[in-house]
Length: 149
Image 1 (spheres, rainbow, N blue to C red):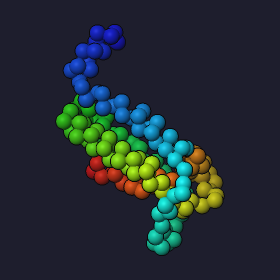
Image 2: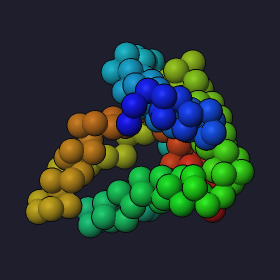
Image 3: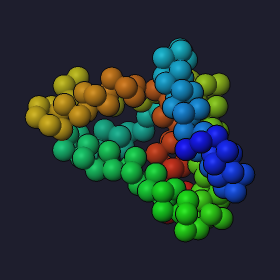
Image 4: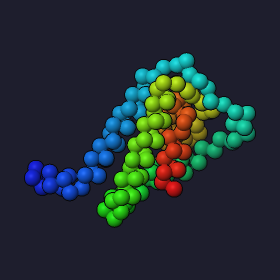
């Protein structure tokens, strides 16, 4: 696509600029994961001890990512106003969550030492390496799902 067509496309579809938040969010998230240090507020309730750890549930957990992004893909062309509303919601919800996590470092100590074997254990190991047990409150997953719903 030449520069003239690209400029015209952006002028006719200004909502495209909102997609630039994705790399900003990812950078901010990974910086918060690596640079924000404790002391951490530990988020815990006795009810947490009653929830079993089932490694195979990771397959449902990873569905959060397409569940969050699919509405953006669907509404981008068909419902521009819905795209903008949902996009702005995500931008504000995720930014507020990250800001709170940076100002009030928090964590959960619920992860087992051994995430299990097989495909689910492998996926959990990758998730644990990229996404630490910090920055859990307020939940970006819950905020994102609420917007998708």
